[in-house]
Amino acid sequence: MVADSSQLISAHPKVSETSAGGGRCVGIIGVPLDFGAEKAGVGLGPAAIRIARLGERIETLGYRVTDTGDVHIGIPLAKPAHGEPLRYLPEVKAVCEELARRVEDVMERCDVPLVIGGDHSISIGSISGVASYFHKQGQNQLGLIWVDAHADMNTPETTPSGNIHGMPLATLLGYGTPELTNIAGFSPKLEPQFCVHLGARDIDAGERKLIKQLGLRFITMREIDERGMNACIDEAVAIASRAAAGFHLTLDIDSLDPTDAPGSGTVVRGGLTYREAHLAMEKIAEIGNMRSLDIVEINTTLDINNKTAELGVELVLSALGKTII
Image (tube, rainbow, N blue to C red; front, side, top):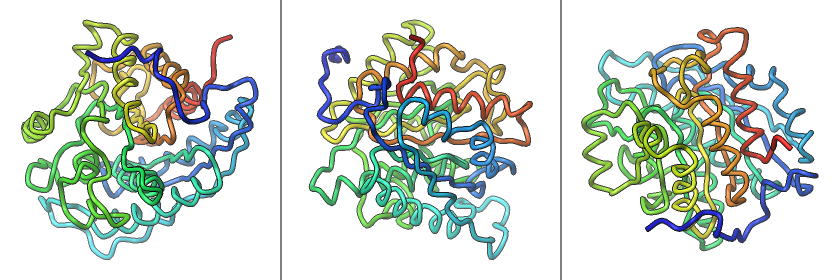
C-alpha cells in the first residue's frame, strides 16, 4: 500500500515556501541539443523558454535566480547512417558529460538546478549530475518522477529509430551503451523502487519487457483517467519521496495534450490537460522533496505564438511553488 504523500516529511527545505521562495536559489542551465531527436527545432527550446521570461518570473516567487547560460553544442563530425542504433552518440555523450558537471556545480552553490532543453536525451546528463552530487556524499538514493507520453525505456537493441531521446530512462537505470550509462563514473544512477513514470500513452514492445522486468511503476493515461490526477500524483510523490536524497522531476512537454502544447515533435493525442498538469506540479511543490528539475522537447518550429514555451514556464512556476492564493 502506498503511503499518503501528505504524511511524508521532507528532510530538505521546501520549494513550496513561496511567500519569499525561502530565500533559495534556482540555477538555470540551457541545453539547446537536438541530436537525440528526429525533428529539428527542439534545440531552440531554451531560447523560447527564456523569451517567456523564465528567470524573471521565478524571481517573483522570491527565489534568487542565476542563469548560467547554455552548454556548448558541437558540430557533428558526420551524419549518422540510416538505421544506426545510436544516432549522434559522441555528440550526445559530450553534452551530457558537460551538463552533469554543470549541474553538480550548481548544486554546490545553489539550491535547485533547473535544466531547460533540448531533447529528452539531456536528462541523462542532468540526472547524472544530481545523482553524482549525492553519490559523493555517500547518498545513493535519488527518486524520480518522469512525466512523459513515451516510456523512454528503449536500448540500442530495442530502439525502432536509433534516436537517443527514446533511451534516457533505461540508460539512467543502467541499461544501454556504456558511453552513456557510465557518465559521471558510476551506474546505475537510479533504483527502480524510487522511480515512477506518469502519463505514458505510447510504449514500444521492447520497452514493455524492460518495464515489467524491473517492476517500474508506470501510471499511464488510462489509470489517470480512471483514478484521477489527484490520486495518481499523490502515489507518484510518495514513491519518489521514499528516496533519502529527495527526487528529480523531468517534464517532457509532450506529456500534455497537443491542443494545449502543440510545440512538440513527438505529439500523441490524449495527453494531460492543462489543469491536470498544473495540479501535478502544484502537489509536487507542496511535498517539498523535489531537488532538481528539467523541462524538455519544446519545438519552436512547431509551436504557435510561443504557446508551448509559455505553458512550460507556467508549469515550472507551479513546480517551484506558485499557488493560486
